[in-house]
Image (cartoon, rainbow over all chains, first blue to last red; front, side, top):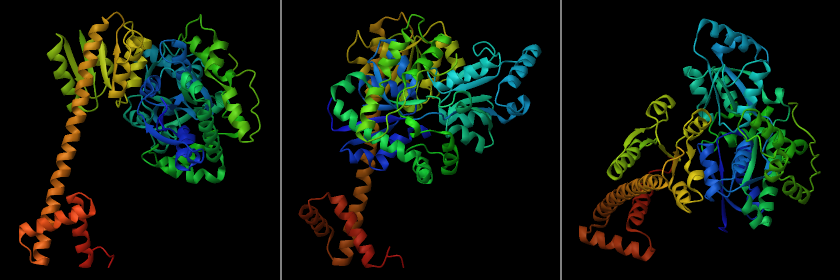
Length: 339
Length: 194
């Protein structure tokens, strides 16, 4: 397909900022690209539309891009750019936070769960945004560090990001792991308390990527480079402290993220959009995510992790666009994580 | 075969449900939101879900936890049925299918769902158009009345004048009538901020 207009999908989250900024501030226009952003309400639909070519590119959970390609059943995807680092946070309901006490670890929660087990109470429910998400693996790791078995000691469920506050308030879930601004929105609404941020557990945590079909990336490499240049410039704009106010106003638009501008602006401090080579898709990040998937039985033990990581994560495509803009090359990450 | 229809639009869900019961002997349950407990109890062979339902990601999480392991239809049919999954995604229909179900049966369910989704969007478009037509007719009536009053024309002449303005401007009658009403308002002093 060579339609003149490109259609990119996104979910209402702060880390869609590079795509939103590239449209709203004219970075795609400057590259001669016509781009229509399509807001979707589920990651599954983003993946399916990308898979059948109803979208030309998308804001995507990094593990989803990896899992989709690993499945071998649909069109393989490539991630030529990382959209952000950090951003996810574990937020506990105010009620639960009071009973487990302060501190970034889950030890208080482990004690509470042990007590509840003795009393024969029902397990508590925690929500993430998709099975194949950084959030799922972060929450699992946070629990496991305190000796909690995420598959046996709690109930893990999946909820759309924008519904997290509502479900915390109603007591349907007792804790969530979600990317900003929805963690900050829950706190601002008095529904929850931030227990730990991804940046505290795994500094510079990989989260969302820009994903395209591998076949399309190969079919029109020049146009992909133009898209990447626009996204890099948009990410740099989003990162700049002096633009934080304008960015918050832009994202607050109901057509984009649709949360309060003040909440969004407060939530941006933890996110990395561009600095220190953040947009380079680091195979070491992909390998870490794949190891997490294998750890929890979400990936076949036979999978060749280094090969799969490099098939999806394409630092070469990012490097070319960065060089064209005169950006310093990103330092390749030798290893990520300590598992 | 047991089919669960999840659609935030209850009217569309009803249309899909009605279409399915007509084609294959089966049990259908419809819901505007996906309730995992209800789903477990019903044990559907196929979940038909609207692409604009935020519950799709919740349904995907069941793939990890249930023995039945429902899979997204895109992955299920992609190779054996070229074009079907693509057409379904473009029509806004998604589905999850339990492994082992005959592909022909999946196809029939999907085709019904897709045709009903298309029918629904056609109905919505028709309704919008009918509303717009009605609004336009009212505008024309008001413009005609204005011309009759201000220019002392009879109804027939007022209508002919509007038609002429429309043809000269190459714009629809309703649009010309709306302009005329706006300008008349301005000339009378409406909407100038005073």
